Figure (cartoon, rainbow, N blue to C red):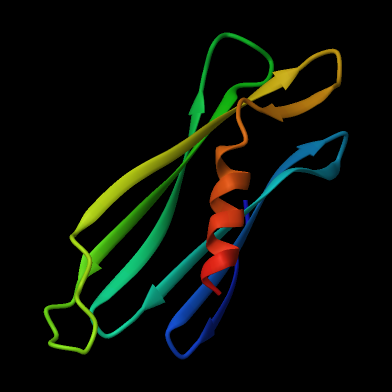
Length: 120
């Protein structure tokens, strides 16, 4: 995996391509988009973690988890601060032998990306 980041004053954008090497070439598995923001009353951060799940197969499953956390700043501002919260969004990529590629077990990360886009 690699990461590309960009920051604007109070916003951070991260693109994480999940890549495998096959036949001496890079092959894209998926693009994962996360978004951080810092406002007067709170900050919201999305951290990403990866885990290989061995199963005695030639291609291990890959679990991707984004922890989406909201942290009140304690500052007194015009807007009320949201409550502290944290949730994990996970997707497991399995090797699809017929398609000869990794496939996502759900669209949870795509939905997170669409949700984040509305916050830009």
